[in-house]
Length: 158
Ligand SMILES: [Zn+2]
Image (tube, rainbow, N blue to C red):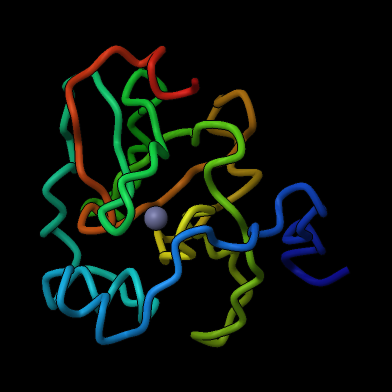
C-alpha cells in the first residue's frame, strides 16, 4: 500500500449512470456560459476564490447548471475549513444524483464526480479526512456547475 492506499475505489452502485440528457458540444455551448461549458463539459476547475456559492448559507436545493437535476441539499453543507479549496462548494449529495469516476489527471488519483442525469463534470470527492461528516467525504463542487433554488429540501428527493 502506498501513501494513499487504495481508498479511491468506486463501488458499482457509485459508477456514473447512462445520462438521460445527451447533447453535442455545440448544443451545450449554445446553452451554457463559456465558463460553465469549460467546467461541466471539459472537466475544468474554476479559479480559487471565484465560487459564487462559497460561504453561501441559504437553505435550498443545488441543481445541475446543465440539466437542472437536483444534486445537493444545502442543509447538508458544512464548512471544511480547507482554505485552498475556498472557491469550491462542500456538502453531501442527494442519493443517486451523483456518479463517480477515477480521475488520474494532474499526476494524482482523485475521484471525479459527475451529474448522473447529463454526465456533466461537477468536481471531486475527497475521502477519509476525518471531518466528522456521515460519509467521511468532502464534495468539492465548482459553483459554476450548480444553480441554487430556495425551495423545500424534501421536494428534491422525490
Ligand atoms: Zn446535469
